[in-house]
Length: 95
Length: 490
Image (cartoon, rainbow over all chains, first blue to last red; front, side, top):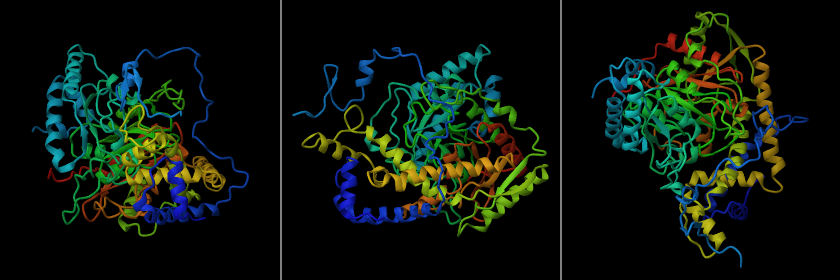
């Protein structure tokens, strides 16, 4: 499998990265190089093998369903690029 | 400048307890040494002198009362991936420029609870994506070790600033994170000890995420015993990290100095790559001889899927990264670049905030997770990951520890691999297997190559058995008698 310039544009869009106009050709080359190198995984016999998503062997721990944090509005907002009256200010997202 | 900073953590904490030196005096000296080295080494991203001095003062008060923890009074450096309350924490990325977390990471909190003193933040590859510290937004870190012809070398990465700070005797220990080798490879390149425990032994809470199922916080140290103290002081169950191990933490320090007699040491035939310098093979053979002389039984083993670990990693890690880094959208923290609408704001913010390597990995991750490619790439890589774990499971039925080289080369000149992503990725060929399997591994300096550069050997043990890793590491350190230091030029 190999990617084209259109694929790179589509991937960038999916990843919410502005189209890297001056780097499209470079990226096509780099991504194809990496993907070609990854192709060697096809040599491995994975028939009947379970996928491993984590090294953790215990079940996901659960805690009491109670409020255990909060009341720190100003701390939460402290690093906001834009905030007003205790709210984040963001671009309009609903017409 | 006195020679205090040249002491090991073990020795300096003994002096602090004996009140031969104060934490305040030590902190002042370490701060001055870091600041004077910064121009040459470029290893640091932030200081907070008031915080450092306040912590040192509190430490002196505890010491005066005859109290104090394992690390009491020792100035420690923190990789810029860990949140330190009120101190700039950016993962060496422009997208987080100016970010000051209102909270403390669990690992750093645990060091402070053990008496450690915050010294500085250290530079790293952006979001820990790199093996040479060249993708940092503050520029490359320079290895204190220089090439034979005086070339400036990489300290390795991604935790290059931390490795440099320890190698140059600017602190008594430093945090790193190891996702594919980002502690062990720089440790090998700088003649320091680099450790990662079992996956989940150290909490990831408050450490900026790269690839969550592979990220292991761990320490850099001057000696194996120092490494045991530092890992000890950052390990333990953390309810804030759902993957944190509930197990009791063994006494890692006590494991250093135990006899290795009768331990079975596995030597995997697959840990060789084309073009690997003979000196690395020789250092490895020397390590085998040392352990044999100390009474270990050497066992030839096979880890047949080793060569597939790196390509599998370069699917799994970018896939997890593309998901983890989706949070940087310029809305709640970090920098924002306004566009004509919300989507364009996201796109411009991320394209201007992330560097090229980070964008490349986000794109690979997005691609392998996208419709039509998920099974062929991501799912297959996860199955190969199972194969790699099975390799280790089978090997550990026959051996107690595995000995390998830490990296396929010594430190290389800055810029020499930055245009070839795959050549750069191959740095992690010997370390990445332990991340995929989640087993403990450490790098111990074993000797110098013909150019006078340090080479490390790696010890890998089974999950939860850091004790055997430290026992073998200490025996190797003892036999190697590695005392070389880079000539001071900074």
